[in-house]
Amino acid sequence: MHLSDIITVPKVVLHDHLDGGLRPATIIELAREHGYDALPTEDPRALAEWFRDAADSGSLERYLETFAHTCAVMQTQGALERVAAECAEDLAADGVVYAEIRYAPEQHLERGLTLDEVVDAVNAGFREGERRARGRITVRTLLTGMRHTDRSLEIAELTVAHRDRGVAGFDIAGGEVGNPPARHLTAFQHLKRHNCHFTIHAGEAVGAESIHEAVGICGAERIGHGVRITDDITVHDDGTASLGHLAAYVRDNRIALELCPTSNLQTGAAKDYATHPIDLLRGLGFRVTLNTDNRLVSGTTMSQEFQHMVRAFGYGPEVFEEFTVAAIESAFLPLPERQRLIDEVIRPGYAALATQPTR
Ligand SMILES: O=c1[nH]cnc2c1ncn2[C@@H]1O[C@H](CO)[C@@H](O)[C@H]1O
Ligand SMILES: [Zn+2]
View 1: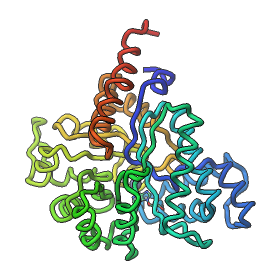
View 2 (view 1 turned 180 degrees about the vertical axis):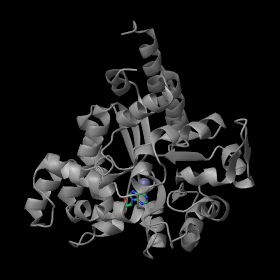
View 3 (view 1 turned 60 degrees about the vertical axis):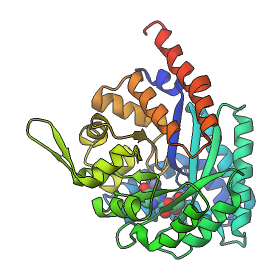
View 4 (view 1 turned 90 degrees about the vertical axis):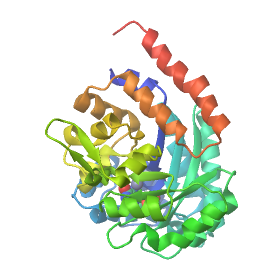
C-alpha cells in the first residue's frame, strides 16, 4: 500500500494526547509569547528531533519528562484553543475521520485558568479545527486524571459535568510504576454511578497485574496500551496459544486494546515492530486498535503507524479497515453516530480504494 493511499483511507484514533502532539513551530511561538525560555532549541526541526530522541530512552518516566515543555506553553485560553484547533487540522490532513484526544486539565492551571475554563478552551479549539477541516473530522475529548496526583475524583466530576458537550470520557495516565489504577477507585465509581465512559492506561510499564486492576477492579471499558496482556498468554512451540483468565476476559468481552507501537518501542514496552504483540493479539481475536499516543513525542502520525504495520506484517487495506471499524465500534460515541461513520465514511472510503486501478 502506498503512503498516499494510507493517508487517503479513513482512520480513527482513540489514543492520542493533546499535549504530546503540538506542532514544533507552535511550541516555539507560544514559548516566546509566554516568556518560557527553557526550550532545548528554537529551531522547529531540531525541536521535533529533540522530543523524539529524548523520549527514546526505554523508560516511561523519561518519556513523560518531555511533556514539561509542551504543558508549559499550554497555560492560557488562547494557547489551548490554538493547539486544539491545529490538532484537529493535522489529524484531518492525515485522513483521520474520528479522534478521541486526551489531556489532563489539572496540568493547565499555572496561569490562573480554572478546570472548567481549560475544558471550554480546548472544546472551542476543536470546534474551530473541525470547521477549518470542513467537517472531514469529528473530535471528542477524554479528560485525564494524573495517576501520581490526587485529583482524579475532581477530574471525574469534571468529565460528568461536561459530558455531551465535547467530552466523551475519562482516563488516567502518567507513571504506572507505584501508581496502580485502584488508587483512583473513587473516581471510577463516580463515573460508573453516572454511566460515564472511561479507559485506563495499563499494561505499558507494568504487566498483567495492572491490567487486572484496570479491568477487574476499576471496570475499564478499554485499555490504554494493554500491550503487556501477553504476560497472561503462553505461546507454544507449535504456534498455538493458551490464554489465562485475564487475557480470556479481555478478549471475550471485546475490551479494546489501544495499541501504540512506536510509543512502546520508545518506552521499552516492546523491542521492535516485527515482534510487537499487535499481530499475535489480532490473530487471537482481541479487539485491536492502532494509535499514535503522542504524535510529536513519538515522531509519528496515524499513517506512519499504518506504514510500520505494512512493513512489519504485510498488512493491507483489509486489515486497516478492520482496525478502523474496531476503533469506531469501541469509541465513546453514541451508537447511531458510530454507525453513521461506518456506513457513510469508513466503508465507502475503503471500498473506493478497492475499486481503484492498482498503482
Ligand atoms: O503513554 C503514556 N503513558 C502514560 N502517560 C502518558 C503517556 N503519554 C502521555 N502521558 C501523560 O499523559 C498526560 C496527559 O496527556 C501527559 O502530560 C503525559 O504526562
Ligand atoms: Zn498514552
